[in-house]
Image (cartoon, rainbow, N blue to C red):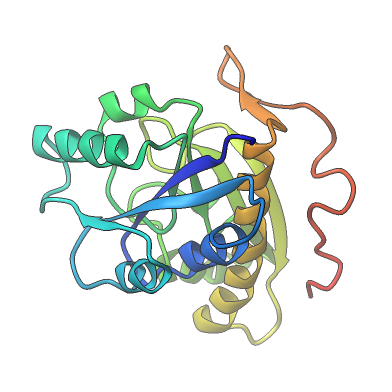
Length: 223
């Protein structure tokens, strides 16, 4: 029997990207990966409710954005999860440096723009889409990247463009980007589970083959 990649998902909100992972991997026969634990930045969020419905254990981190308490709690929860991969899916806390170091190359984040544009502290959710619209950019998109010691800064694994359409407001643009997030994130996780890419010794993402060769990832229907 093949080993199943265990995924710990860190979340701070409604958990729609978590749901995309649950739908793709949990409860699917012969799946190469599964979400083993959901770790929330605060109680009462939608991600925890989704985890409960899926039968996945959930936990809540202590209040505060930094310090040894958060570090210790993260290490403890990731250890319980037996995490092979850590996925930040709308997680708003900065990961403590020792945790980043321990999971380097095994911790990824999804961001609703084409990094390095529209990233960094304070650039999350609606703030990102409002900034894109103010800039006049005609294309935005989705980025999945390895996590390092800075917000939205690690080596880029994959990106996918999303058009900015005439008449878009933040809500319409966010919905279009989110639909792509729900496709890209499970595809990247599957790629990790299959050994399709890795963080190389100089800190770049190295792909074994061309990006999602074959039918692994199909965006032909995306507007």
